[in-house]
Image (cartoon, rainbow, N blue to C red; front, side, top):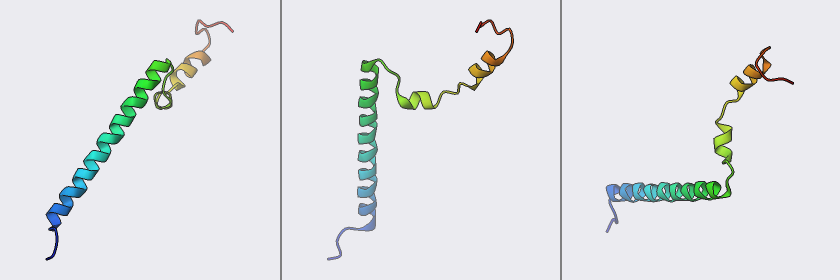
Length: 67
């Protein structure tokens, strides 16, 4: 008896991958929820924000902000 066929093996791999992705997604959801409960922004959110436009605005003369 040769065992399981190749297609069954591929199906098992896909199912494991799907379950792992679902588990990771659930973990991220819980972490995000905990971050909102603490009231602080998550690290990922801050890393994607580009503050260069704000720095350029502050560097302009007569920008309305007094030093």
